[in-house]
Length: 151
Image (tube, rainbow, N blue to C red; front, side):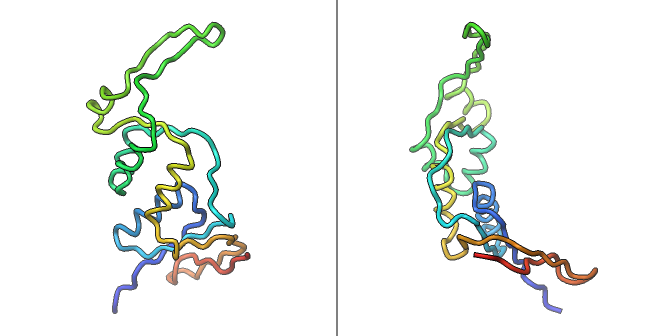
């Protein structure tokens, strides 16, 4: 009996959904992404990406692009809540990259989302779709399948 190729539906084309889609495609898994928004928009604010996160983004081929659009802070300061007096300084920049093998970057959420969207083919992203039903096959059958969408 021939082995059936795995096919995955991802609900949500946010940063997590797009990262999963790009990662699964890299290992040959068929993916379709369904998003309820009618278009992508540059929303949100700043986001931090630690060295571990950058290592994942590096494997997806996005590190160079993100270094161009992001900010690499020199240090992280902790301050007293009432006076603002610094209590602790944690060095970042080249120190953190040498220690952990990747930079610590700050960027706009929209820049990260756009970078992820750039590596997922637009034809597998279905905008303006909302899941309205799921069906689970009996034991031994196919896994859970999406039974219907609404636009």
